[in-house]
Image: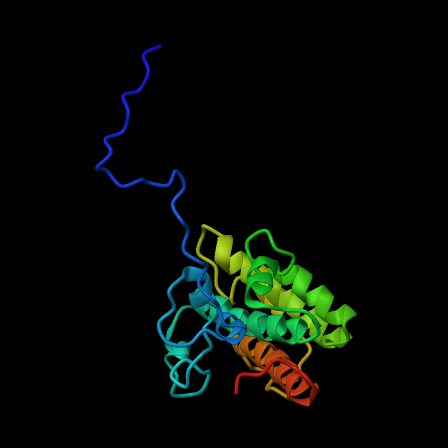
Length: 203
């Protein structure tokens, strides 16, 4: 094999391995509670609802489809549960949080979060069972290729199993009952976070 010609003496040396840039420092609170325009899809998933997104009579949520309503309101409950769970972890940094909540992390599944929340005492049996029903219904709306709604018999049957603290009319729609169950779970978890000493809170 022919030898390489010697490098000209007037050329500066070039290191074989270029110096890598240090990883960007990520703030834990920013990872948990993204603000502004998110730079990644995973951050976009965790952005909090604004006043414009909130569920109220003036909200555009009541104008959207059953499928969108189910996915949005259940995501609201799932994020609240995730934040309550991580408040129990004594060691947590942004990198660890991202690994825990990545697609292969232990907190990537709504099912796991529900039963972990119950094991931690964050959820009572009623909220646990309600969230499990909410999760099952959400999965149908998220994955069913055929048209489904809260009037679909099997979905309506599951909604009737939800037990609410708030007294609702016997004529209340299944969508209303579903949304109310999500709201009650969120309120329960938010109250727990506010009462927990040392919980992770955004200043």
